[in-house]
Image (tube, rainbow, N blue to C red; front, top):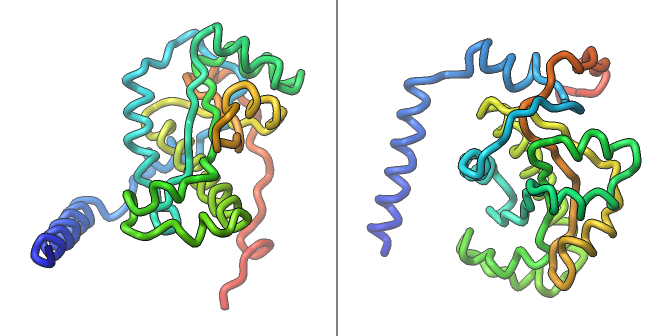
Length: 215
């Protein structure tokens, strides 16, 4: 067993060294796509997102780090007209025209019983979370939020656009989509191909010195 673990560590190190030797950092085009020229989209082109694209998106965002590799994030991809109609009553009125035309609306959620699979993902027991509901909920929410951020960046990396939304009724979403489960909704995220003619100028961002401190 020790030899297998050592070999796995060596292989992981080799893969990291290989990518670092080939690519020191993203170039300006990639940084523009991911951050500098990216926008939150509220209107969408009539261009579908395939199930294969959603699976490719999963394969990227699921790689982002979470504490103890707990991976509490869960995603429901609301794509069909029937599913969209189920989601519609849960939305704040002003967000209905943003969500209904979107090719896909992802419900980013978290599993309050993520610890049931913790040993599978990290080799660690989930007992301490099972005994402390408050700790489990805090951990699930924090890390699903991280995974939601990875989700948006992964969508951009694959050439799609994202439009996160918090203007909805979590309790209604949970009742409609997660009844009799341990899942709770965090936020919604439209994904697809945004209409560039509808973007707004970027809002003001704080300077480094106004929000940061180097000690």
